Image (tube, rainbow, N blue to C red):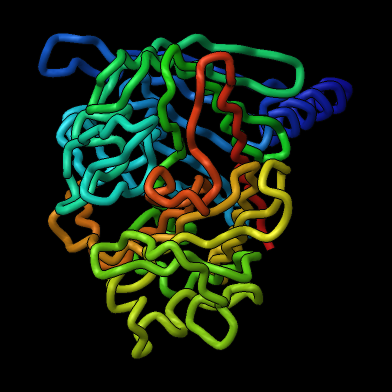
Length: 376
């Protein structure tokens, strides 16, 4: 009997220990594949004590996966993506990527600085989109893991040469992804230039908080604290005006199901084939503030976005059409993912009344985005 009494407490302690999450923040590195030109790509996995996991590759600074708990404590992926490097190398939809030099659209691929007109690739005819067909999402970034007592991080850097994709100036970009035990995934952007240029950087993950793209996002509930949007023309370029969201399908100041008004008879919705618009966030432009909140009722997952940027682009996955085969061989159908992209206004270089995206030598571009996950 003495043996039994000695063994049972030990077994109990072992059982309890096995049920506890890891006590440490972890970052690991492993090969992810090889690009067609022979360049090796690495994947970095960040994990916190709650089991939240973020996977990042140094090709395109792409987030390949975000895994968080639902209200029952079950871990699951909440982003769309591909199974392998070949999928990301051939991708033209910016899945999980960092986009730049200029996120969103520039009208007709042209802008002028100090009397000089610059011409960009029109990869979203008739406009330029997300930095061009070989923008930052097609580049191999230099990566360095970072570990501290309260977070794990991955520092990524890229030097964009003068004239790349038509943009002036050599731009040195640094991005730090960090994960803490509050389930916050933070993006810290920094950039400097040796010649006057324009910069607008953001992340382009497609989220589905229920099942990572196996069902639509129309039952997701969204709140955006913004009184105005920048209305667009039929090519999705801002008109230069601001539109009050009151009494329109664009009023998300109270949390509302995305599908509640998406099919209303509204000119702006017709132009975007749904939501593909820029909301002007309430609050000081350069302060960290709430940009959006998303709730998925069935899983109970909640995502809040904080940012220092003045606006956020909400895209409801209108052009996802079943032609992309994603993770586990699953085809992504219409509106099975949503994007919420903190950024400056689209086409700002061509609108003097919009917040400036001009960066000059001696200045530093510095912006932050935080994606915070929790459950109801």
